[in-house]
Amino acid sequence: MEFTAKQLAQVLKGTVDGDPEARVTDFAKIEHGKPGKLCFYANPKYEQYVYTCQASILLVNKDFEPKEPIEATLVRVDNAYSALADLLK
Image 1 (tube, rainbow, N blue to C red):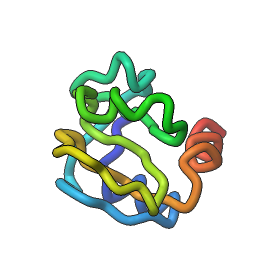
Image 2 (spheres, one colour):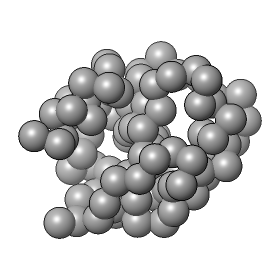
Image 3 (spheres, one colour):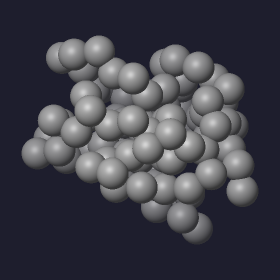
Image 4 (cartoon, rainbow, N blue to C red):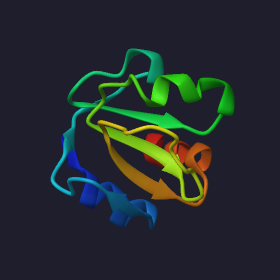
């Protein structure tokens, strides 16, 4: 299935930073994010990958403040872990 950032934000009650029409068809680990993939970031030990990840959409906590520019469209949610679990259902 294909989802846009806007659709994901609506389902997860989040907001979009970036292109609301960014599309994804699959999940990937943040270390292996590529165009067309959805990744998530919630654990600070993986922050380095936020800036190199090439995923189309990155699911993050609402309070995440990037220290560098990010290529991916961000979908901001209350809790990225639980939002990902909801998507997998």
